Image (cartoon, rainbow over all chains, first blue to last red):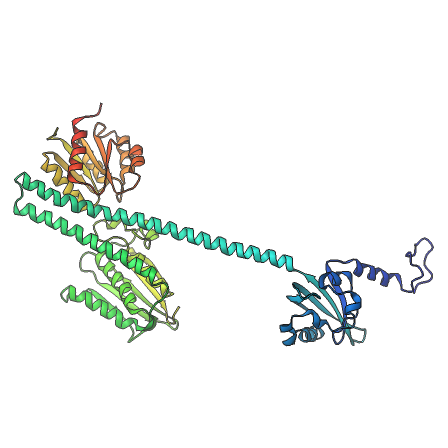
Length: 392
Length: 126
């Protein structure tokens, strides 16, 4: 206690107090803090000191709490789990421990607290007790939660709006695609009637007219079943039948089906290990390989071979389908998997532009990926499907 | 009134519809040429002046908008009437941009096509 203070240094008003100014100043500081509960715990966790910040946060007056064990601030669940003791042990061991969690006020209400426990040791390293600083973060947490909820809602709304937009675009393109074959069908039939009126309906005219009608009905039929496929796919999103499926057997089966149609003139070469099993909906995967091989055949005029490679990797099975056909230009590559998009260089190839869209949807439902690139030496194209072995 | 012996250029990417429209106009007694897209249509306009262009809106390689822009640039078939055929929904605004004389929405009846074409051919521009 300094008694030989310089005369010009004013003493605190309570100059009769026996404490040194340093200690007094510290007490004033702790007492002035309203936003933090700052207090000391004994070695066993009993409350030794109390400040107004602690009273404000926890609701106890100093006389009500000093001497009691600090576990009263914890929820019954945390007390049961031994959490208060664990925190003291860790603070003693590591010197300091920080914790965020629910704490209980005197009136039983809960608040979200950020707590720092610091072990206090004397010069010999003997544990004296703990300094505990607690901050009530309830408001901050509520604000954060509001933001989080808001952002989840915003995302959900944006996703719903996007899916509506996609559906609208889909319907608009679908109806557009339907109208051309309907127009042709209408006009071709009427043109036959008109030719009869004009006395020009010979066999040749009848034959070309009927061929146009059949072509249009074929196209309408194909479009309707592709549209059904797309709507079935979205209906299947909820439940999918997955079973152990041998991709190699499936690819060979699909290839054999095409070979049959082509009277045994085999253009499809399959290079594969004995087997490669994934968890999948086999009939959907069949559709994937059928679409890819069908595309490869359609887009490669002449008798160039189609090469199918199956690779069995530790986590994945990959299937690549390579053709030496008309290949991909940059614009086509960018829009390849969009619904109704077709290569600018593919006007002569029949089809509606839903095949690759459906293929991609199926692959992604299986947690897989599909990629397309130009073939080696910029000849033809290569489509590569990778499927994870476990169910996605 | 019916018109005959006029020159019609059909520009439509769907091969079946293109052929059928060609046949319909041939039945009506016109001279018809057909193109699968705008660029092919421009080839026809080199040295051949149609009275009417039947123009699909969306086509690969060169669509109706690009075709009309190029046609104006080159100053070819300047007197030809133009009718747009399309399945697009707001054909009106497309027709305005294209400065076309009329439009026919897909699908359509043969009688509609013949009626519109006859009307346009009977009232040459200017």
